[in-house]
Image 1 (cartoon, rainbow, N blue to C red):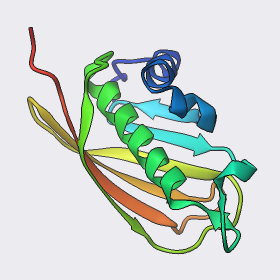
Image 2 (cartoon, rainbow, N blue to C red):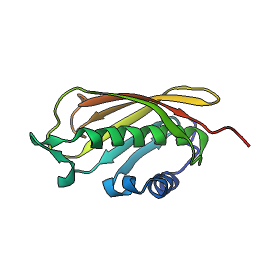
Image 3 (tube, rainbow, N blue to C red):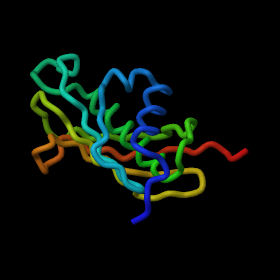
Image 4 (cartoon, rainbow, N blue to C red):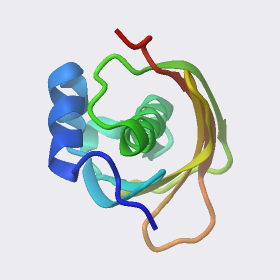
Length: 141
């Protein structure tokens, strides 16, 4: 298996400096490989929505952060790689608690990278959300 083209530390630095909101979520990378990533979103009260569940915007942010990690694992430090499409399906209501996003590459071209993310509580195999997204890479030069 090939090594990722960015380290966990480089990824977190770039993600939180580029979008300070990401730092507020406190995400932790648990695994980073070439074209794959596992990121934990630690539970905090600010993520609670009515009905006692994790809010959708937090799960969407987690999916997008995971996709960014998948992309950077392939291309390295490219701050201007940006989301062009993100489609998420909320499958069931998660209880308040940590969530784990498992992102993986579907296809990488010269300018577009497509990936998917399954989000679930860390101790449950059944996802609470599934996302597919596309990132565009900036033109070289």
